[in-house]
Length: 146
Ligand code: HEM
Image 1 (tube, rainbow, N blue to C red):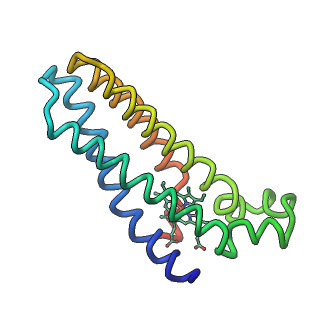
Image 2 (spheres, helix red, strand yellow):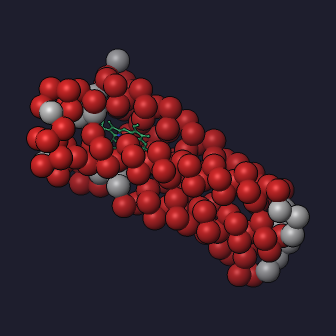
């Protein structure tokens, strides 16, 4: 169970990273080029929302089955986890920041849908997706992942 969830979470992360990077670049390019918002722009922003939400669900399950997640806190105590940078990353920082990432994507997506002008849609997406991307890049366990 644990290794399967860990495997899925690890490989789904490539898709999440790729789509969020593409959706952010697309939003920024759309905003700066002042072009009209199209169905393609809607699809890529929606796709970013879907893949990150799926990763959130997989991550939540993983948090409860991984020895690096909740188990680490219950076994060793919060004090010991916070003192060790790797433990802290997996048990605290990564989950919290990734949840925040998904919150930013979700707010950006729902706010942009309500805007009527193309420039406003792109601006909303660009701001929220860029913040989400920066947050995500900051707390991926790069050294363990690659
Ligand atoms: C939504 C964006 C997320 C991305 C892109 C992401 C990405 C990753 C990556 C790349 C790893 C390392 C995998 C490896 O070493 O092979 C990882 C590990 C982990 N993630 Fe996430 N994650 C996300 C969300 C979450 C959330 C929301 C949680 C929990 C609430 C979570 C919990 C964990 C845990 C516990 C591990 C360590 C698993 C282990 O090796 O035992 N992740 N994540």
